Length: 186
Image (cartoon, rainbow, N blue to C red; front, top):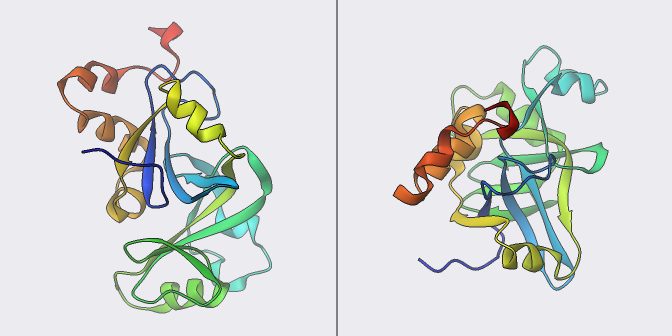
């Protein structure tokens, strides 16, 4: 399968990627074009709840949703990723019913509806690349492209996402799946 850089693709950090911002991460690429690229790290939950980051939004108070670290860019900004049957006007469609942006009315609908397929995640900051920067990183083998799947973003245990995706890459990658975050601790 020959995947191209495009929105709706997972960037799986190669085992050799040592940058602490991206070591053992999975980034959902949400925007890619001549101006650069933007995505969110889907497997780095923080110790903060969303209500701590957005205290002005009463509907999320006590909801218990975790805030994720989306990346090292604009870490004072919260970005929302939704999965639903309808894409809000002010959202950017990424893939398969998943969109970036939107508004708090969609969060309210998700929190008050009973057991639907809709869900959301909130990210503090994002991962961004200037024109040609991500392509350069691909050329050095920093990332492995994998088709994105909403289940990996919204349903899987985030602590296992990188490992489990590495296991899908074939036998050659399997030894890396159990690699510690810091190999010097080995």
